[in-house]
Length: 419
Image (cartoon, rainbow, N blue to C red; front, side, top):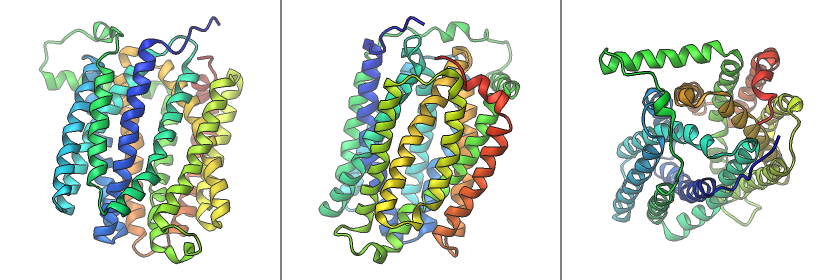
């Protein structure tokens, strides 16, 4: 295959804009978690706060998908980034004045979750169009590394939060980052054509047309067994993500276990998380340079899925140095599986159906997140965090076998392609 250069003007611009907004978001999201934990002191209220963000992430993508196959995804991305800048600046002003209200923060989380839910579908559907032929795996390895580089901001946010006595300044940074990202994104030159391929406007009312197009999206994913099995596995995997959210509360609730380390437990946790970032950066760099043969992609992804749940299930039982090793391996395996899966799926689905597919896929995934967070958050009120983590990941290992291994013939058709 004659590969074109990946670093076109549009790809460079979207990469810079994405990185700026990811850094700001990483800082403010971690700080907001600390705010909720410090003010409420409740693991359940903390998990409920996470659910208030995840619930619209489950609902809004599937609602937005049919519309995003008809309208400019670029305009939606830019508009939502400008809107997010304004919302986070408002939160900065409120917290700067010493304000705190848990119910209002829940409402804020619902709004930002709704924005992110629509944004995810628009971005995931627009981004593949900016990748030149033959460079999908490279592009998604880069995007995975951007996510990990932005995670380096978490320890910085923890230090600022504790040293400056609050999170207000971090929200000002996030507002500025969203505004800057939007300014980059409006300069993308790609001319969208998916609107021309959308079904012709029907005589039925708007709601009837929406339902019909949504049904077409559901029929598409049901008819593609490989895509359906991948989605079901990630629903189970995101359920296990509810157990991963117990890691920060575990460090805060068992700070005495980490007393020998010369930093606060929350700061130690963010430092350990950066070993995940280091692993993902190394894994992403390998993905960028090393072309995985198409016939090996399924095997690599399957191994990564299984190993990730073994690592996640046992991590909290380890001494701190071994936790660092486990986090590093999680990062390397995570970015590898992410690049294979994202490149395969986004290149497999036709552009004029991509938003509806991404909306339904996100809904299925976040359904797992919401149910996992609610279930595990409630159980964490009276069961040990480590028990919940290991049992949850053991159950999801069964899902790896059921959906990925037993359905390997269909999944291989999606993964084992040269993209």
